[in-house]
Image (tube, rainbow, N blue to C red; front, side):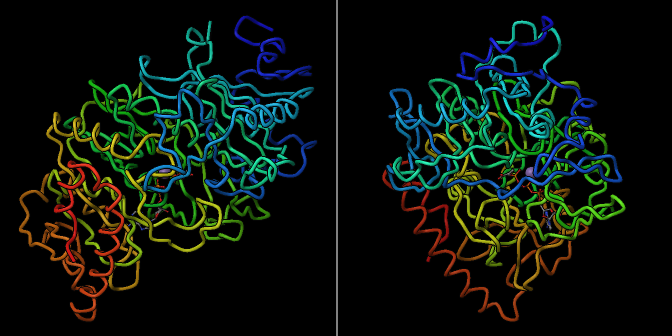
Length: 539
Ligand SMILES: Nc1ncnc2c1ncn2[C@@H]1O[C@H](COP(=O)(O)OP(=O)(O)O)[C@@H](O)[C@H]1O
Ligand SMILES: C=C(OP(=O)(O)O)C(=O)O
Ligand SMILES: [Mn+2]
């Protein structure tokens, strides 16, 4: 192949033999042809929709499968990783032995051998000094399209001499028949070997495993270098004021960071180093369930040729029924970031953040739609990560499930949560950043807080209006809540007013406070953790 390509010889090192053809870094035109080829069958075959975007079904897996996630426990990771079987917190970092890893790798390599393969080389991380050079190997065209959308495309110059730091071998068509003997959760697997720099995928076709998989890898590497690694979206205003929006899936990172008046840095994964905030990705991955052009015009318009829709229902005329969640609530679209008009160019990065927003979707309806946090409260709520798992993103979750997800992204943390909290605190402190808790979930009315109200709240945070607004203290949680903000229904700012009686709020609040206190217990075995207890709710 040409100098900017690779040969089957280059794949031998991964155990992949006899490749019949390698399609290296396909462009969008070729991907379109490949993923809509009439010869394709089943989940491999895409459908062209009216907007020009191709729609695919991701198969049995329409969300991540955290129970099938494994990391090889070896000399590198033994004492550095936050393991599922150690300490007090529970997480998805299940240990894997070197022997089982080798078997899984043989399985995937066998699956990918003798095939026509797509190989995509891309960056994860916008900064040359902390980015990963990643190679994705897959036999499914739309999976190559997904990673082209989501990761950063190197220039031709950068591709010359591209030696991957990390390789993703996607064997989604194969499963592990010996999973029981291996002591694993199922025949499906998403496995990482940080020493080798390899991710293996078997059984699941869901593209999000590759995107969030690399995020877990960045989450391992960056904090150890003093760089914050954050499950957040980010944008920047006309005064170069940077805001980051932390939040678990479905809490509004993508929706709220896509703001026509602010340049988008990225919608999901960022680092914060000595120069400022930078994106890990080159694209966005928006939820499309009940998407409307009126409520989210920028995202709606981003769905066009080169965007890739997942698990939506396409009508006979090629239009998409965004209201139909029959395949999953987790319908999605990935698109390159330049499908949004107002973005930071050419590199998705900006200065230090001055506003740090924690998005939570409170399914209990207790938390206020916004509160201003003290430095200690910010640490407390970041470690607690109270929110809800919304339907669809994880296998088996079908209704909002209240959860404490440390750092608003426990599923992706590779190190202990306190390590992320320490790095974030240091960055926030040097930048003089202020923190806010924003509930995009429910209140006493039983309905979700409206997007219109949340957007007005975000505007009041970003303009600074909220810092001077009259405020009261919400008892039990000791949160400072504003009593009036432009464009926000003042009846919703105090959650007590959304209940038939304040006593009803009080009862639910006491129950939630207990959960907070119990959850925080796992951080109280250090003096620093002990000191934070008073920043949380009291019984
Ligand atoms: N008050 C609200 N704030 C933010 N999003 C809301 C709100 N009410 C409903 N939504 C919907 O919730 C979803 C938020 O999803 P998204 O922004 O993709 O989350 P994330 O990027 O954090 O996974 C969108 O479908 C959005 O339309
Ligand atoms: C893609 C995911 O999350 P988010 O909605 O935060 O992008 C995920 O959790 O798999
Ligand atoms: Mn998102």
